[in-house]
Every structure is written in C-alpha cells, then in structure tokens.
Length: 235
Ligand code: SF4
Image (cartoon, rainbow, N blue to C red; front, side):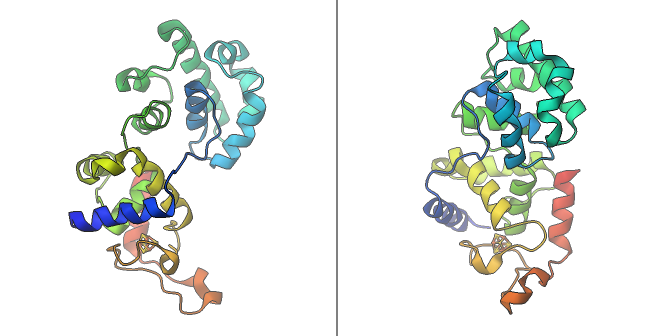
C-alpha cells in the first residue's frame, strides 16, 4: 500500500470519528491499568460492569492490595480467567506500592515489569493515560492492518513496528483507537461489513464482502487469508 492511500485511510477514519476514545471506563491511570488487564479475553462492556462495582470499593494500589486475591475475585469473576487476573492485579498493586509510591509509572520498561502487563497493555497505558503516540496492536488492529494491507506483518510486534514506521505523525496519537474501533464494529472477524466501510475503495483486501441481498449478508463467505491472520494475532 502506498503512502497516499495510508494517509487517505486515516483521514477518512478521522472524519468519521474526530475524537476517538477508549470504551473502557476509568478516571485515573491506575483504574485504566486494572481495566486493561481485566479486558484480556473480555469485552469492554463486561469489564466496565465489573469495575463499576470494584472501583467504588477499591481504586488505588493500596486498596486493591488490601483486598487481596480472594477479596478481589467476586468483583471480577464475570470477566473470565478471574483467578489469574486477580493474582496479577493484586501483585501489580503490591509492586506499585512497593516500588513506585503507589503511582503507575510512565516508562515502558517499568510498566512491562508489572505482573500481567505486556507490550500491548503498556502501549495502551502510555497512549491513553500519558498521551504518548504509541500504537497498541490487539487482535482487531492486527486483523485490520493485515486485511487492508495498511501494515501487514506475521505477528503483533511486526505490525506495530510497521505501523510506527508508516502512520503519518498527525494520526499516530489516535491510530490505535481508530483501528480498534474499525475492527470491532466494521472490519469484524467473521464477515467484515465491506459494503458499509468508509475505506472500502482504499482497502486492498482481496475478498471483500458484497451486499448482494441484505437478508443474506451474514452468510457472505470470507476466505482463508482473513481467518489465518486473525489466528496469528490470537496465538
Ligand atoms: S473494505 Fe472490508 S476488509 Fe476492507 S477494511 Fe473495510 S470492512 Fe475491512
């Protein structure tokens, strides 16, 4: 894909949603960190439901550490993988209290040392909480980048590197949000909504869906390349 097309893609996504925001509910960097850790294999809506009951009770590292794993589980059970998530959230809270005076660090290396925090989560925190122009590559971003040929790559790290190299500076701060929302609501995994897509003519996916009969849209086939790319992002 050439630079003109890439720029046009981001101009269209920006025009459609000039101020994209995360769909996770949070008021502090720590609340965002907890919400992102809980969002693994869960929907933002499900996480928001859980944190709506948790945060009024405990929304600081010290409070979550006091709650402990057993005390935290009832609040986050609905988000799935709750044993592991509870262990990580309590352990990262203890580390924040012990090593960072109860504050979420702004440095990537320090963030990635926290239990349950990998590169993707660190990128989200750096971008959303601290305004750094990072691009977190989750399953949606990975799929959109590969399908469209915007920034193809065999794994999330390669896609992130490519996006950082090719996304024009003016779009970098919001690129993660635009791509994630596009993947979540339009360029969805099974049957992308190509007929309704604002970047349809710019996208280089070879198996775009067509709206032949609106009643049959859910049955439009998507061929192998899209499914393979999605599997790689999940693995
Ligand atoms: S045209 Fe289809 S495959 Fe391409 S970005 Fe839009 S929804 Fe995704």
